[in-house]
Length: 182
Image (cartoon, rainbow, N blue to C red):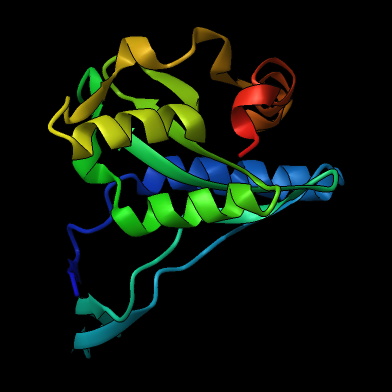
């Protein structure tokens, strides 16, 4: 299993913005989306301030978030990149399997991706992620270029939601309906 240390919190600001957004959605009755914690086993604890300084992951996590939005089950992972592409090594086989199984059960799976280079957020539908994943597994490109992210699936801050992905989810559901059903 992998190890976690104090440098293991990349993307935590992005996830905090999503958490605030999810709290807003819940308080407005728009959806119930929960952050799924990754189980860790502490190895070293700083006794002075009672913080974990070294731990290992007990098991592989699935995705970062899971929930329901107006009777539609959703799951997604939050990814952040400093590059002009999303490296495939940021995505793990167990996540692909989980998202694929989730969609087979009638749910909607996607990534929320923050491009620091452009200061933009995008929703990447699972069908696009899976196409790039399959190509990478067969020797193809090992990243998803910024240009591959549908520009109509850009996610904005709006109405008290820092990462207001529900509007974008509506676009995904209406415009890409044939692609998201397995």
